[in-house]
Amino acid sequence: MTIKSLIRTIPHYPKPNIMFRDITSLLKDPIGLRITIDELVRRYADMEIDKVIGIEARGFIVGAPLAYALGKGFIPIRKKGKLPAKTIGYDYELEYGTDRIEIHADAISPGERVLLVDDLIATGGTAEAATKLIEKMGGKIVECCFVIDLPDIGGRKRLEKHGYSVFALCEFEGD
Ligand code: AMP
Image (spheres, rainbow, N blue to C red):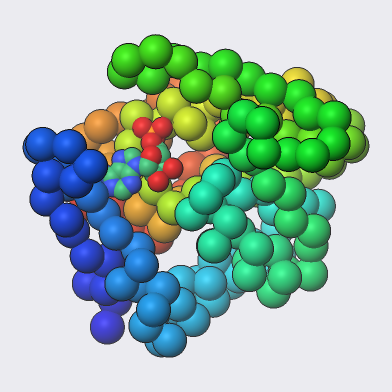
């Protein structure tokens, strides 16, 4: 059984011609959940990491158990208006319009080494915005980590162009 084989594809969701890669089928499988987190724990156990940062919402599902297993703290990056204390935000471009992500202003101390986690990288727009926020706070990004990479869309290359290391547990060709 592989991680990739447990990820279900929903064609034309949330709009026509999008192949939605759904990790809920992976997460509900007890072995699937375990091998996903264990593989990441193996990769990061010996790396110097202070905090794991997850991107709302599916980045929380993977990031929090990973942080727990590594014995590190977990920090959420959320959509605008969701975090209760003082925040720092970053606005980024979508296909139509803009969006904003936020992090608590006291979440990262300058110089801390962080691992950024989300379920999937497509265009890399969301992850790039997260890296800008983390850099703004003086955090050092050890790696950007995903369950799924869609290499044909180019997000990985986009992050690598900025000098970030990118890791994904599996890839789906096409979009
Ligand atoms: P992007 O900013 O284009 O890299 O998009 C990444 C975010 O959108 C991630 O948080 C994903 O959860 C979600 N996403 C984008 N494309 C897909 C897809 N084909 N299937 C599932 N989730 C997606």
